[in-house]
Amino acid sequence: MRSKLLFVLIFLAFAFTACQPAAVTTEAPPAPATEAPAPEPTAVPEPTAVPEPTEEPIAEDTSPVLEVIGPEQTVILTMAELKELPSMTGMAGIKSSTGKITLPQKFTGISLYDLAALVGGLGEDMGINIIAEDGYSISYSYDQIMNGSYVAYNPVSGDEMKTHDP
Image (cartoon, rainbow, N blue to C red):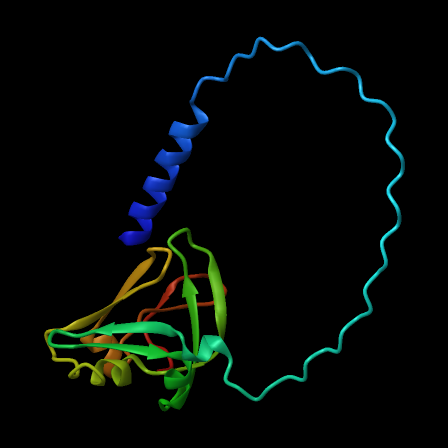
């Protein structure tokens, strides 16, 4: 919210300064310039030594990258903390709302069940809503997270499959 307000304030400041009337001068135009002497060449500095890389953690590993909000508490995680959590691997594809099929491929990440456990767990009457930085969101039900009850599509035809692998 602060960044949106800051953007609006900067935009308004720019708009007000850009819309000011031009100053009118009554001075005579400057006299034509005469040819100036060529500047003397400057010496090129010697290159400096390149510093050796350090073994310090990458800055992105220590910056917050994920906020998990539960009914009672919120947990903010860095990339380093996410990497310490147990991961799982599985196959997944998607059929977009426009009908485009992305074929199943292998993905590795942290289960939504484990992320929910960080903020008190997931009750049968709950779900998870994921919101990306760009505002895109998707929701998963308890049944999808706990039982893998996802709709699956035939990768060739795009038709919904009645039975499929977990």
